[in-house]
Image (cartoon, rainbow, N blue to C red):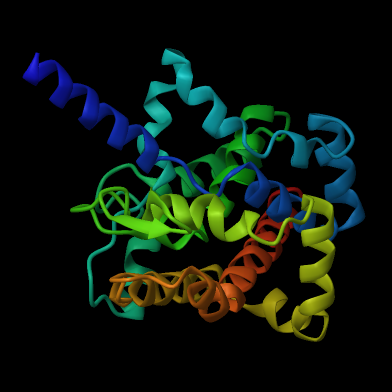
Length: 257
């Protein structure tokens, strides 16, 4: 019985490690991307996924994990990164996406090439939409030792939750916006910086995500004040969501050019 319970716990922790932003976060990212792609790309996306289907299917890659036919994709949702990496280390891993196994960097690279070659591949498009969001959830670039924060329990408004869960959904849901309201809020908030984000490389965007990951891990979670934590990290969270949407738009424009 102890062995069975231990096996269940390991499988549970493994499965939750592969979830990125919650559905709300992925919808926000997809909506921002949809509003920033060029007309040709938008037409192609709608042709493949239906009108605004990029948003409605943005969590598909999480939903299929209950289907054994997609078991091969479990490890694609995260990239474990060690502490104290430098920017050149991130660049190396992204240019050599199989260097540490077939994980998130590999998945995005290989599936992007697949979609570029066969532009009618709906599944490839849905994977890409999801994985760019996962790339910008900082604990999807977390430590292997704690499964991206899934072994770290914190007290959040009186409840015990995992640190990974906090950044998946709690930090996004706390504003009580709909995905359309949140998306519009971010586009208004970063309107003056839009050109900067458009020019930012994916490598630099991921480097910033890694820096945020280090900031999250170094935080003192003893006697956590949830309101203070939200205040201290709200701009970081907003920036990640907006950047993910812009990077997704840039990647899709490049694929469908």
